Image: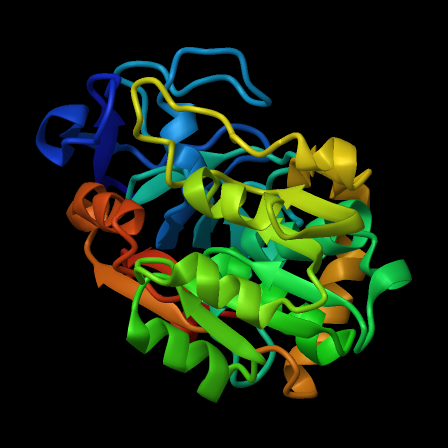
Length: 350
């Protein structure tokens, strides 16, 4: 089985904004289909686009090594097995793995290679969103860093920045519909704010681009902020630091507003952590890998119960990935940003 594989590799390390034409390069290769012991050949169906990718392009110390120049751009994917030399993976089965920006990949068994089975009515793409790393990030951020089990309830005010994004959307819904907190979502357009309130059921949604944003935030948090789930950093983080409650918790999940800055600046109001005896803590979802099964079980149940909705922004074709990543940083997505590379072959699923 010979297949022609389109790949997108990292061509240059961007200093500031990503230029899709110079940062990446498209290349072609031919895969013979010959497999080694226990290897499988997969066809990529969906590619996950995530803010963390900007950090992977930098040649700096981090929780994971940077993507090398001329290496296929790293990403989590949902793929379908089309040839197998491994008895544990049958042709037609779906897997989640780090295949990267390419149409096909040869994979070996690893902790990263996970067999998935989407339940009725749920797209396989969900395993890159609510039931993937973004959903898991929201779950463990709230449970482990925010300690929402202790703080949750109607007297707990939770604010989520980037609330119309993939991770923020899940965090906001868990806080609201699972723990019954008062939840304020922060987003970047009137349409997104309407969606957060009317569709997801949040108590309030604020547009951070409004000239009255801080005034609106104060009005929405009369009892201050007990838990702030931060996906954006920058000015929004500063605003919420000014409103943090005594013993409040700030979950540092991301800082997408600063990722493209050549010289990002830190928060100006961090002294609130001292005066309010608050805690601000970063985390990486991989730290909780041993607990993924329980989290996915919980969130699957919440989906069935209608407590957890998902929304996706999907672009089509492998070569659309670079431009779609730029759109992600511009906030042009609602929910999970995905690239659909191919359709699932349901005829071959066993």
